[in-house]
Image: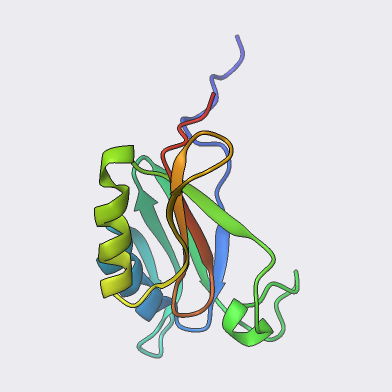
Length: 138
């Protein structure tokens, strides 16, 4: 008998120059919950996991010698990806206001997308791009 897949099978890993501050921001701005934290031994955080609804997102400290070449957008001066997170349609306006009040830079305010969902996009203080959308999968 084959093993059933776990509820989540993809775990994004985002690089942050300061994961400790990122954890605080993600909780305040987006309502994410800290799930697991690895102390960096210097008062900082080396690795952490946050819970976004039922999903986990990994955060890792930026190191210049990362074997995969992964860096924080704040070091690169931009990013090449964005995470899309589902939130109920009726809460998008409040969600955006909370994120903006916490310091998120709104890149595209709440709007009706051509795909037929409502969404908005923002950047966190280190430049990670987040889209919050009523899209709940097919």
